[in-house]
Length: 110
Image (cartoon, rainbow, N blue to C red):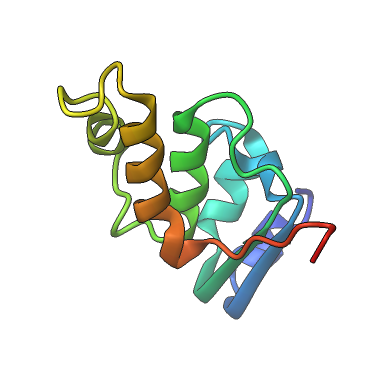
């Protein structure tokens, strides 16, 4: 964090963040700083992309593709419409469909 002024001057080809759940709160200091870094590509590594709620997931997706996941209200509306309210299986299916291009999952058994 103390070197943010230096890093803000650099255009990165890649930004890779391990333990990415640390930026799940878009209002945290760390999240605000890394969102300011300019890059061509971004990669997040985490064992827990979804911990507490879908808004945290939006924050991670917004970091990866801010033009696609522009605001949390749109993202939240995808999961709160009449088609999925009270239908957990439909909600999970919709979530998987959205995440599929962004998620590579490995289990210990793999």
